[in-house]
Image (cartoon, rainbow, N blue to C red):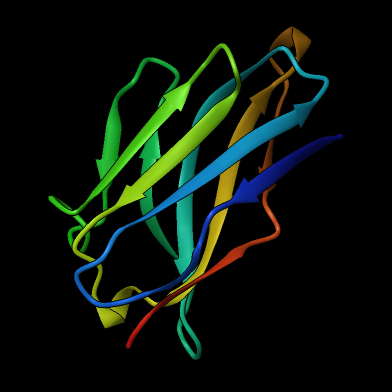
Length: 120
């Protein structure tokens, strides 16, 4: 079993910054993709940003130029730096990871979620 432990989040004013971190804890062979998704009240969960083991990144159009995703493969962590935050960024943010096991097996996991609220 793998746990994704998230930290960061909170309340910030519009235009401010927050940093989310997520660490994968458990027994596994490696990690393929890691990323962040978010879910606002009354809306479906949407992908915010993702990164492959090789470092390729992908962003939702709504956050391009404002958010930066990075990962440390040695520490099995992924970080989301969020700048120029807007009220529409308010949501619960979830870390996710596709974990690799021996013999080509893999499984996806989600974190418990962390609240990000942008407002005065």
